[in-house]
Image (cartoon, rainbow, N blue to C red; front, side, top):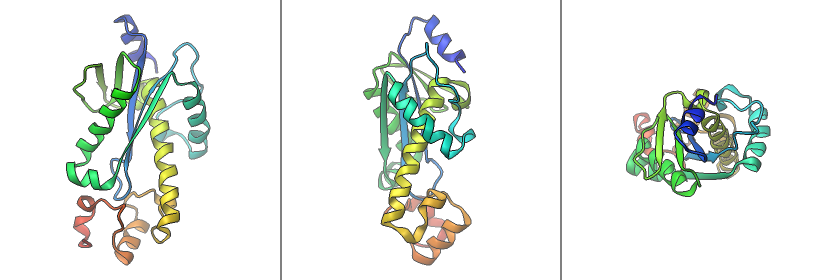
Length: 195
């Protein structure tokens, strides 16, 4: 998982960042973008694409990643902003915020191309190919899941702790029963004739 990091090291970069997001597809909640600069001399065992890990394993790795990162930043873009500028632009906004707040001299990004003063490399399926992107994917996913569990206390009728805002059958049936709340992305649910 260090092929791309090694390529950047050969170019003379030493502080290599990774950026990934969680929550581009859900009907409710924010998109969360995380950026990390991980030390490459001592790798954390088990770091992988967050989608390939259990929730318990992600939680364990989250603390290890955050505690050992040379630099870490999380950007949270809410549903209202997603509706204003669309999900791709909201994701890019979060990624730019991460780049601006990381102490990195180059950044590897999962799939999305970003114009930046810092050298960036967009990697398709980067969360499975780059150690730094995989670490960022875990931070983003755990942060978002924790947020959705907090929102579940605020809006218990939607059961956000179960589906994290994704368009599951349960979520859609509850959305039809109760209508949207402020966490719902109006542009994502407009086909349900709810708003």
